[in-house]
Amino acid sequence: MYFAALLARTEDGWEASDTELDDVETLTDLADLAREAAVEDDTVVVLIEQEDAWFGVIRVDGEDDPKVFVSNAAAAARSSYGALLTDELLGRDDSDADDLDLLDLDGTEDGEPETEEDPETAADETPAVTGPLGDAKLLEDFGVGERELLTLQGDALSEIADALGCSDLLEAVR
Image (cartoon, rainbow, N blue to C red; front, side, top):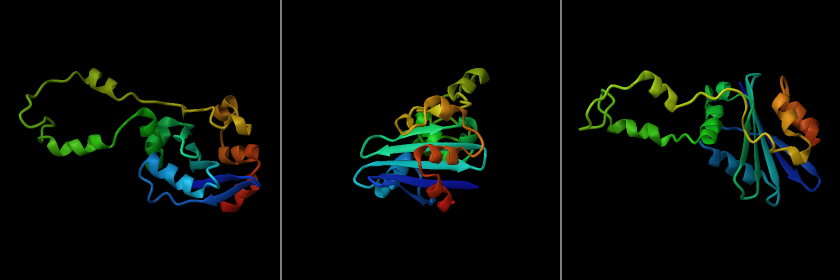
């Protein structure tokens, strides 16, 4: 079960809303959703969690590229919304899946000679990332330092919202 909330900074504090991620397929889609919630291009923080397996923080400041942090890359990569974040952070591209149409049943491209591949070399092509991934300093100016973000466990989103001064708002949208 996922939970996602948008926290939009305003001159009066924060505005919170829960958000549906059903139409979000890329980090760009998520950043666009955050920008729509922004007040005058101010900061929007998107908080995502999958039960107690992992949490993610996405910060969008105006038209700047989003900053992303994922608490547990291995757990997140096994979920659809988490994979969206980890794939972006690792530079993986979904268009590689489109290349499958060009492959023969044996996995080689048409006309390409078959070669034996060393299993150890093949395993090294896509390294497994465990632990936190991304920019752990993305909320430092809001009072959530790198060390604190890296050590959050349990109800991490509530602790982040508490540090931002909007825990009541986050609880209201849960």
